[in-house]
Image (tube, rainbow, N blue to C red; front, side):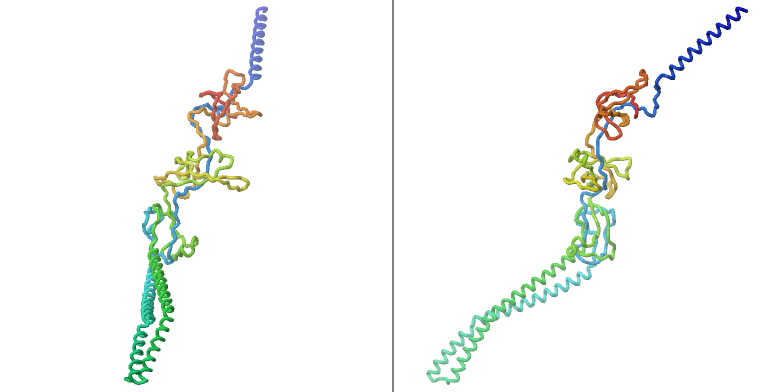
Amino acid sequence: MARSRKRKLLIGTVAVVTLGILGLWGFSVLARPETTIDPSRLATVERGDLARSVVATGRIEPITKVEIKSKANGIIKELKVQIGDRVTTGQVLAELDRDNLAARLREAKAALSGADANLKAAVAELAKNKVEAEGPEVAFARRSVERADQLWRDQLISQQHLDDARSALEQAVNRQAVAKSQLGVTEARVAQARASVAQAQAAVDRTEEELTNATIRSPIEGVVLSRDVEIGSPVSSILNLGSSATLVMVLGDISQVYVKGKVDEADIGLVRMGQPARIKVETFKDRQFEGRVTQIAPMGVEKDNVVNFEVRVSIDNSSGELRANMTSNAEIVLEEHKGALLIPERAVIYDASRRTFAERVQPDSKTGRERVPIQIGISNGTRTEVAKGLAAGDRVVLQ
C-alpha cells in the first residue's frame, strides 16, 4: 500500500516537472521574435549589366522625305508607281494630260512666227528709210539743176525746163528730210518687233517647259510613302500656288530613319551627341534596334508647365524593316555599368538623412535579418547597383 502511494507520488512529480518544462519552452518560443521571412519578399544579390537611361517617345521618320508636286497645271493621265514601290532618281512617277499643253505650244509657236514676220518687215522698212535718209536723189537732182541752169543760160532750154529741174530738187530734199524724221520711228518699230519676238520665244520656251513638266519624275532614290491623287485628278502648279499646290505623292529614303522624341529638362543635361540608344517599336516587341543621338534642340518647349527638349535619334535601317510613322521608344543610354552587383530597387532603405541600407538575411540573428549600410550606384528605376556593403549571393529583404 505504501509502495503504491510512493509510486503515484513519483509519477505525479514527473508529470508536473514535464509540464513545467513544456510550459517554459512554449513561453520562450512565443516570446522569441519571428525569424521566418516570406520567400516572396526575398531577392538574391546578382551580377549583371545596368544602364541608366531616358526614354524619348516618337514616330519613325525617314531622314530624307520629299513632297512631290507638279510644276505644271493639268489632269493626271497616268500613275506609274504604287505605295511601297522603290524608285530611282529620274524615274517617271506620273504623266499629265498633254493635249491642252500641246495645243498651247502650237499657239505659242504660231505667235512666234507672226512676231518674227513683223520683225522682218520692220527691218526692211528701216533699211529703206536709211537709204532715203542718205538722199542719193538729192545729189542727182542738184546736178540736174546745175546742167539745166547752164543750158538755160546758153538759151538751149526754156525757163519751164529749168523750173522743173529745180522742183525735182526740192522734192528730193523734202523726201530726204521726211526719211530722216521717220528713221527714229522706224528704229523704234524694229526694237518693238524684236521685243515681241523675244516675248513670243519666251512663251514657246515656257510652254515647252510645261510640256516637259507634264512628266513628273523622282528627285531622289527611295520609297513611295504615300500617293495622294488618282487618275483624272486635277493638279495645280507649285510655280503658281507655292506650298498650296496639289500634293501628288510623298517619297522617302527609309534606309536611314530617325525617332524624334521629347526629353524632360531634368534629364536633358545628361544627353550628349553620339550617345547610344536602344529603339523598340510595337511591331517588333521582342527586338531592339540600335541608334545614336544626332540632334538636340537648343531650346525647350513648355507645355502644361513642363519643359521638354526635342531629341533626334538616328537609326540605320538598311534592312528596311522599320517603316515610316511606326510608334517607337528610343531609350537613350546615359550611363552603363557592366558586371555590377544588382539588387531590386525595393530592397533599398533610406533613412531621414538619405543614407542607404539593406536588410540582409542572417539566420543566426534573433530576427533572421540584419540591417547593413550600403553604397549605391546608378539605378534604372527597377534595379539598383550596389557599390559597397553586399556581396554576390547575399539574400536581401524587399521592403
